[in-house]
Image (cartoon, rainbow, N blue to C red; front, top):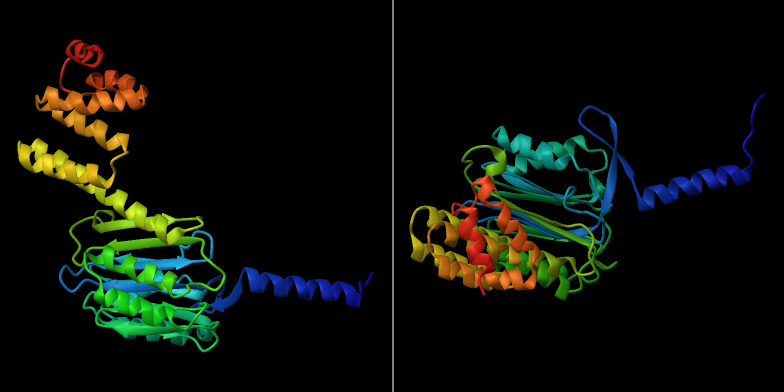
Length: 340
């Protein structure tokens, strides 16, 4: 039997399609003509290359859940990409692939835009290992939408509350101090001060890779942090970068201790403690390192504080000699941790 659709049914079908497209997906096509979904990640971001170290990275904030797996892409020795607006994610991996084959950022971006039937709704920025930058803001990106290219970096934004977000990011980045992470975070903070996303905020991410690859790809990722869902994602990202640095100093301290350089180790441990004074994990393993090198008095001063704040760490301590992570005997350890 032939089924006929009433006007109401057609209305519901077309309404559902419109809702899906506005809140979820817009269709685009890849190089092979395959129809692929795109996700609306209206946001602001920065792609940059450090002129001193050659490190490259992306930092981003969006009113979209879990922006980290979507917008930022980077590969050591190759480049970095931010793909946003009505985002076609493949601009990230394919852009890196092309730059890895020797394309400049501009050549890679131009190639991908030519293949994209919906380039007018995309916003994409790329920086290559030579510091060359290319960026595209489609005519159909939602206002306020713009970008600015500086020396070795680009800032871009769409669906912003004001048209001052991009200029504020550029000025902040150019006048910021510190390493690449510090400067990109300053740019994100400036975007918030200038109004940020018109809808508010939800997630953020930062990804930094080495300028020159040194080994397996995962070893060349300097920093990769994501805030999936948070009322103040940029502030939380700043906090996590600080924690990341604390763990880096802890690792440097452990390495120095293994080399027998007590002065260097204590300097590194001190920096870790300053960055994360309430992190019992860092204090605990610092104490373990000191015990393993015979500095029992200094070790127990730290460990007693940890035990008092959380007795579970005392029990963990008892389990370490059997693993080889603690080189003193179980008997000696018991005397130390039970002494009045």
